[in-house]
Image (tube, rainbow, N blue to C red; front, side):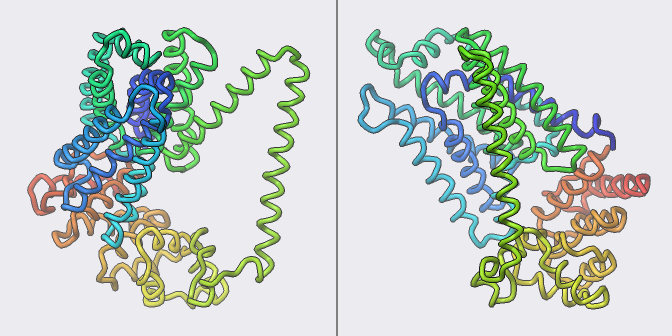
Length: 461
């Protein structure tokens, strides 16, 4: 599957997100409520999480209704808590709302099957899984928001520029604030479903900050935000594809890098003494490089000293450090020889771990036959999915077959059929026949889709 065909829809989704979020970001900066996007995104994610607990697909209409309802409640809270000459800054309320929504979301899925994976997906999104229907729905929703903002642009801008002055002129600021946050929430609810909380926040803030740094004119700020956002999204997605990296975190990282570079250029260009400014930049680069090298050296040195590297978990079978790099089983396997690792031993090691830890540990296992045998011997769907995902990396035909087995089994919970489908899509791209993991795999349309997937895998051998 070529880069263009696989990344075209994610890139188009990024362009749409940049278009609406760059504009809303300029309002957010003028209102000095930088983290309102992050808070509303987390509140929208909480609505999706609650829907998830009721067994609703996170991308279903029911989950969307939950998410939108929670977001509108958040919009009402933010519009009511902004008052003239408030002694408690609204940013404090926004920050508290984010912390509460995040904490309640974690508590809600604590101990639930697939809970850790759900939280990770909310934070990082699933850009690579975006469909043409997702883009069309986003275009419709964002166009509606854009039209409303265009019609009432004078009032929105006036309130964003000076809230107190607008109130003194007789504008019903609280009602206009509620409309602003409600429209804002509509955008966020759509965005979080595909881009995740962190990427949505970056799309909103970084292009707007760049525009404000470079000019005071609103239209030019918007043009800069759109231009830079388009370029950075393209570069980030390209690097994620060719570097085999997760798309969301990669794009976020490149937005951060772009912001630093623009800030440095602005600093040098506006400095009274250009040579002195360049010297400061060079010194900063040198100090940063020295810190990076120092931390790398310190980490490697500390890892060789048991008193510094070991922790209390070392006495209970595994360490957090071993889990963090994903090679717990790999190290034991290397030390004992290839014949030491068996499917039974592998299953025993994975039994007490959640899905995220299972995947981390399996990165250190490279014996595809042992993994395949473990899948056949396991009765736990979560373990089978983790093993099949790893097998797909080592032997894509064998791994794809195991994932298709999970999708074909009516006893497999829909959430795992959904994950198996998206794991295949990450490897092979989309398929001509659409498979619906939330209906029975024995459904006639799903049977056709499964046959099409098997044919696709065989052609890619």
